[in-house]
Image 1 (spheres, rainbow, N blue to C red):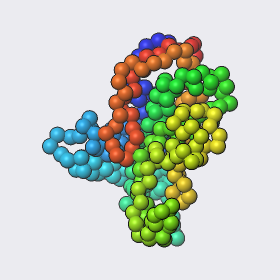
Image 2: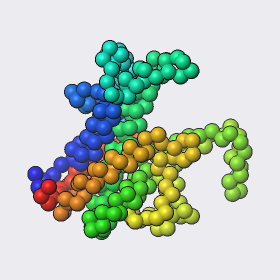
Image 3: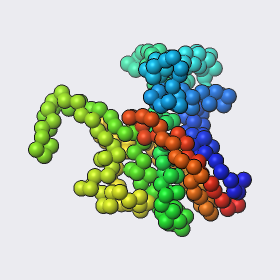
Length: 279
């Protein structure tokens, strides 16, 4: 309807990456919801909403991963018999040095795509919508100038930083101001902090859709750059291209609930009240 309330996560931001990833992998539409459930249970294992009675978060997450492997084991066999234009079929047909991919490699690739291709884009879309609700001047600027869409999506990634931290291991000694990171040291990279570095960004604590340059690290850097960055950008651009121009009014309709996680900057629920223009 043109007016109403909804949970933006459930109705919009969760649906787009699930549909894209499921389509790419070749899942029947009847199974798309499985991706949402698996991702929540694996990434949100520490969150009370997704914990399972009588099971530790680690056990619950392992059980969800096992379910993913069992499901894709069956799907792989089905694709071998009936190939299609999808990634699972591609994995079953690939060869490296004349040898097919080991079965566990195929299953692991499927798991990575399900998790990494779903959770991060969902939370960037949700976090971006929250940013537009809280910074409506920027929403109106984008509505007035659609040419700012690409830079707006980059600012959404910088602002939301869907991944909170990763760990890396130093391969050599690296001087850093008055410290030395030594070869073999484990280093925690905190992306929300890096994306608000006062020495890199002008007004780092402001959401600015025309930010240029925008040297955020939301997709990583170097050999660790996100494999799905182009797809994530496309999904954000398409979602906002068709949604934001239709918004006449939007506001929060309740408290924002964030995912209890040290790894993912997730939004579980984003209740909004809206009025839209005609499609």
